[in-house]
Amino acid sequence: MLASNSNFLVPDGTFVAEFIAFLIIVGIIAKYILPPLNKAMEARQEDIRTSLEAADAARAEADETRSQRQGILDEARQRAREIMAQANKSAERVAAQADERGQQEYDRLVRAADAEIALARQRAVDEVSARSGRWPCRWPGRSSDARSTPPFTATSSRRPWPP
Image (cartoon, rainbow, N blue to C red):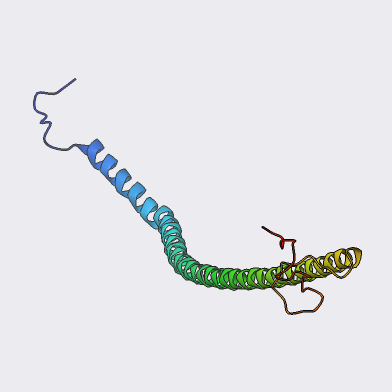
């Protein structure tokens, strides 16, 4: 029990012993436990610092690679546009040549058809002339050819055709 002459503000022997034990434990912790912990923390900090520097370098390299990739893509797009423009010009040139060849073929066919028609017309005229003797199927007075002159005279009783 408490003695009437003891004061709780004055430390007694147990307090001093507990305090000395506390200091011994703190000393042991400071001498044997904290140095390896500090080394581990410093190593970890150094690893983190190295990782951050590596990440910054990787980010810079990625940015450089990205800009190179973008440059290559832009160059490829420009090249593709040039190729497309050349292809369009070539296609237009081929189409124009095809149109020209088509027009030339059309003109050749029309000339051939005109020649065939003229030849057929001439054969028909020659055939009609041969059937009717010396009277060709022409309008009177249109040609000075002796074969095409009709046998009409001013005293003729027949009227020239067409009326």
